[in-house]
Length: 231
Image 1 (cartoon, rainbow, N blue to C red):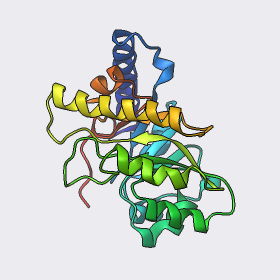
Image 2: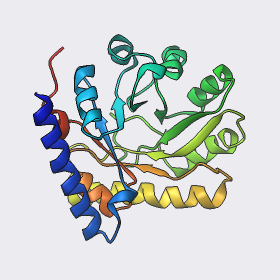
Image 3: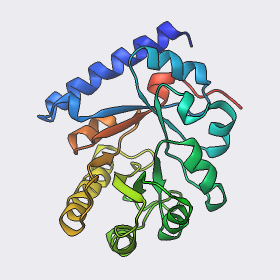
Image 4: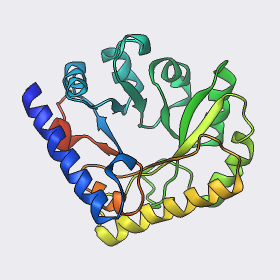
């Protein structure tokens, strides 16, 4: 896909995002757009960055390691949004600006032990209840972990993340997003987390519904980059 095609896709998505925000009685400026660059080359990230996009997400540490320059050499923020295996935690910390998929207390503990400076994360919650998805299984499990994570010296919990149900219709998908919004509000009431403001939900097929349910960050891959490149 050419740089011109990518720029046009970006403009189209931003227009749809603004329309969805207006329908929900919100300002488009409340919602960040993350370009999910899984399987796409770094040149595509640079082309979109030149077109005005400053936030990207990668699914795998191994792929990010093979195609991304160091944080200091990048013009855009790039977060990890895919499942993180504990044995790749140190590499993820050095490679990504934020880890948006911390899905267990054990992983959070491991990250905290490795850190010597503040580092931002999102906690992933499995609001659809699908066994194929990662994330804290319910609010009780999340709170049990947060009782400890909220006291960590270095990890900064900036919000929550979820995935909509695979192939879900509007009712099922919005139910999953609404559940995360409810949990998000309860976390704010229960814990002293000064950086807690992100509600990351919504992808190419369901981001309009996510915006209606309060998302502050939508993660767009296919609609922005085109079909995934075969590896």
